[in-house]
Length: 52
Length: 250
Image (cartoon, rainbow over all chains, first blue to last red; front, side, top):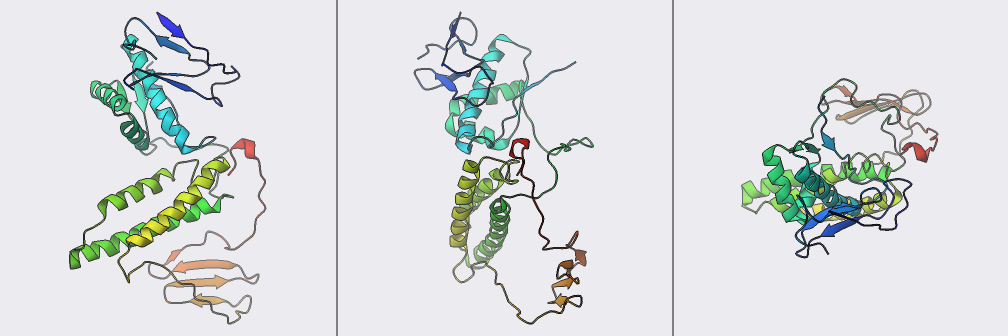
């Protein structure tokens, strides 16, 4: 299962936007988010223990 | 066919260094996530500086990268180009720039570093004065970072070059402070106000020999210590510069 996050970016290109980084509660980076890559895995391999 | 993942992350360009520092955490984080579900994924990551940023800012992420490197799934790459023509890019030609402070700052910092290293090594050997390893190591890292292919040539946004000018000024101050007292490296401009008649000018100080042509340009500049000609063409010639900023101009 994946959580897809819409950060409100325009889809004209990958660059030129603010990007995000999802952290675990303990501060460990999990995965980046940008206009064409907004998913975070919630179950299965590679999922974070808990996502905030 | 073999495909290897890679992200070409410019250390600065249309964004400042600080954004790259953040970006190089995001990209490996994505790659590590993808590797969890794709056992065949291999990723090539370049730039020692970018590894250093990850290590300093996100040690736990760096440790996961290190484990993948040990497994052979993240491959540190870099080094000199191998194949003929690899460096060729139609729009990246020549060495001229409108951001002269980048070239000057880099050259002065390199020259200062070399002088300070000699002077402090002498002080360490002769007088037992501790050698400033950490300070010089950090200074070299800063100089090398700014030799990145869009900072030194002047092809980044003004934000990047404004910060680089400030960094070079700070570096010069720090390096001069590291020179032994009384032994500060430097240079002196000696002005010889005697008129040199056009077409007959040869200036020779025993180290350099400059020949002037009829227009007053330096047509030849020779390093007399090794006989090397330093002028590829007339020096001091003004040239017009056509500004095409959307084509990666510098």
